[in-house]
Length: 375
Ligand SMILES: [Fe+2]
Image 1: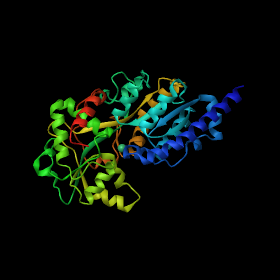
Image 2: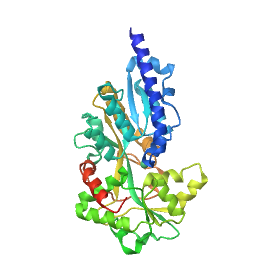
Image 3: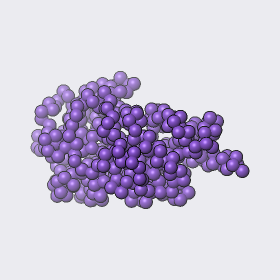
């Protein structure tokens, strides 16, 4: 009987894996926030091996829906299995795709843990009632309070800063100072950014609403849009490429995209990464905008104990180092050293806000962008 159940479960997992394959090719055609999530190199069914079967009966499984796709993550999951016997089944897709999928699956979902980028996306999952509250002293100790949900429904795992990326040959960093100052007349026709529909921009706007008030935040959106070199288009990496191509001088981007270019196997990418500088705005005032990628346990998880163990493992020192370096990010656990790539940009002052705020101000941020000149 146990055996039959087991094979039924494997068949289900394979079905899920096949469905996911389709989803990923959709993601490749959508915007870059999805693209980052869509460079899938392995198919999920590769994970189900005979060796896994033996341990699956002992310690069970944890089923992960994730928008991360890095080989180093896979190695970490294997290490978790080695340490605990718990098998990690991975389904990859973009954050919004996986949220939609969990909404459709409802109580029947296989997902135990959901990992995605941006506190804004984690907030959407929370609002869709997809998460449950987690009580874990290990997570409370490892992840600072400002990087987790106020109701403990999601926890930050890695951090990224949204910075100015500038052309080293045309901009002296001494000309740069704050997010606000970049709306001045001297920057007319020189700025680059992706569209205001993108969650990274919605979240930075949400932070400005918190720090400056809605009116000043709207002025900033209009001021930035007025100084754009071209209509918003492409993903973050496209902005860096446009800076190097001379289309504009300063782009609004997440740090890890520069890290990714610098560590690329493509010499052309490395050239782009080396031709630009990273500037942390608002160091003398409100700090640079920081966002996270993070995780929650699904409301309908059938393996809650294993899911908690998995998140506790990911918040630990070794896992944090590998997890952050896999995407050139900053670890969420403050006891973990930064990689050489991000350390080279120097320490910086981050915005002093609880990232739960990004979700709370999300709808207002969307309304402001809708009214603004930022397409
Ligand atoms: Fe991204």
